[in-house]
Image (cartoon, rainbow, N blue to C red):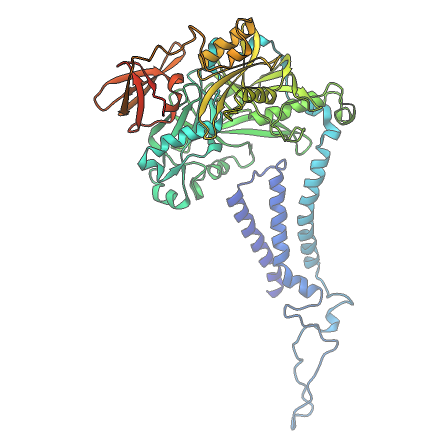
Length: 599
């Protein structure tokens, strides 16, 4: 029985470690998933530690560290008991039970010891060799063939009249608006958080929208609210720069911020044991119903190489119901199946490995890459930046394409559909996005505004960057248009309509660069009326409403006496962060209003 326990204890220990790792980390049981092999490495490592007593016996060392006796020892017979042998002192195995450097090992112990050793070493070898033989050195052309890139034209860019389809707001600003909205809800803010990394760009009713779910603030908040679930989510309109809280009829139980069996990843993993998931993210359908989407991927090159998206699992966080879809069968309301970061990596492989691995390293003939953030490494794993376009019912990402030499110019752009993976390359030489951002910031350097990542549009057939300029607090203060081919052609204004009008006039030669960046609006470009006769008032906002009319967003506010005042949102952009109950100073003629300048 004692000999059998040498095997039982390590096996039980391994089973416990396996169960703990599987429950906590939820790895895919798939040989193409590195975490699967890492899990088994830890399991056999734990089995090795649990086998220490057996190893000690095998090598002639007991747990207490006593060495075996060289020969059996017998005590001298007691007086009056001559001829009677005392029992052997049981200090340890005798030398007859051991070899010169170790003990006699049974066949079962020898096999078990080898299994433990192999179980620990084999996963390490598989991970190392799998990575090596899955590399681009051996499969360069296979990597380049993963992404199918089609030819595009500059007409694929949205025009200036459809800027409502472009998300000019970055995630940081969206998170600030969302937090401001949640902060006004006392019953929500004390129990739930909204994290900036949870915001996802979606197409909601053919307009760009950033959405993010609420999450439990801590395990204690989850325990206190788990019966009701997460009550809603936040939407931020990057065009009108407004945020709203959307409460659900029934709370979401299965979310990433939950614990134990309600943890979203754990809930999905129990049903899909072998599928490998990209980052699970939050989306909404056209009716505003909450969903989580888990893109499924596989490795198409050897063991760990060539990531391909094959489908997605749609999860209802309220009921926990799930449905697995192949890429062609994914509903139209789903916007992100192919993550933008993965598309950029796949395009880099397409653009650099078509002529083989060594050309991508040495000759680099015809090699290109997407533009990356300043200061990042010039490699496919570098952090790529990209913008979003709401086109038809989908979200498209776009980013510049430059040479691998790391200059500050683009030779073209790519647009890619995040639902279908359709990708187009559009030849268009000019400045890269970061050069355009620097040019815009240079025109207002005395204000120290920072440019967000630009969007790409066409104005009268001319490719143009358009972006917002923010202050240190993250508030949008101005807009800027920068010519792609000649990034010294820059126009700035506090209003988007004024900025576009100034840029068109600058390109046409009707105004100078100084006029294009002055604080004076062009006639007919939406300049405010003469306010010399307007009255200055201090209003306490009792209600706020935003309305879109012909592509222009208007802000309506009610004072405490039910009087209604309205203005274009771009003319009172500082009120984008205002809330009901705030007090503001305005100039008004009784209907229209502008913010009064502070002395």
